[in-house]
Image 1 (cartoon, rainbow, N blue to C red):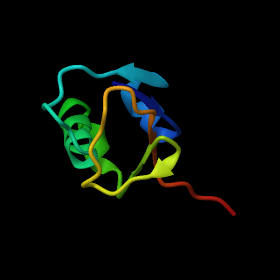
Image 2 (spheres, rainbow, N blue to C red; image 1 turned 90 degrees about the vertical axis):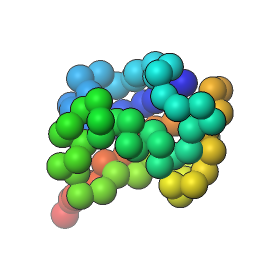
Image 3 (tube, one colour; image 1 turned 90 degrees about the horizontal axis):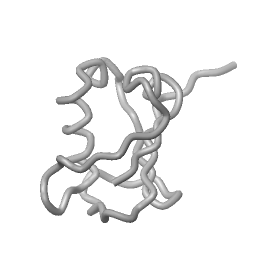
Length: 79
């Protein structure tokens, strides 16, 4: 599955797009989050990050399909 990264998430992974194939069978959003934390320890330092699946924010129990468009969106601050 292809995952897009934005902001600090892109900096942690080192790229704006990553193909992930070694994740559990029938993954959920939570599985993806745990995968990212296990592969990139700095993800655990983020207080939170959102996952969008097919242009909609997704809760942890949403199942992921191979052809879904997945984006990792870190917290944003501004003023």
